Image 1 (cartoon, rainbow, N blue to C red):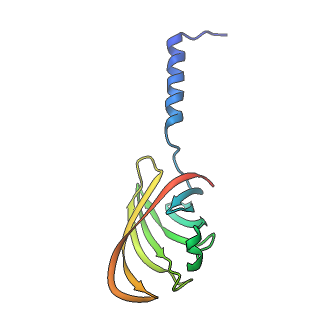
Image 2 (cartoon, rainbow, N blue to C red):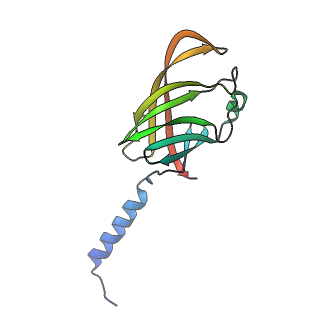
Image 3 (cartoon, helix red, strand yellow):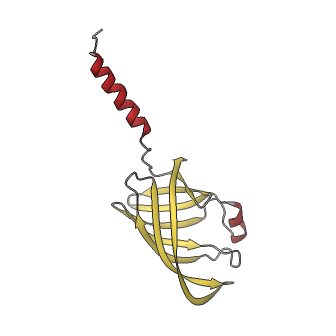
Length: 142
């Protein structure tokens, strides 16, 4: 058995410890947090989908269940663009769709998309608009 010099062993140990502290790179079919709900990210080529895996309780009245689509779109480099949905208990099963886009973090563990949507009052458009920001933070492989 070949003995390695002490400085080589220390270098290996330092490298192993450093890599263990790095965040895991998120991949397709992974679970993410979004406002207290667990989301599932699925990918096919550059197409992306965020669906509810475990929606928070307050979304049930809006018709959100496991598998409900929140975002679908494309990833181009470190940029997502596509369609988001806004759910309301006043019009369950009829979400408002609007365009969103935004960056993926350098670590690939956070996606932030923004878009402008019309404000509705009990399923009726008000003519007013607001900007929504959706943040998805990597949790684990599903």
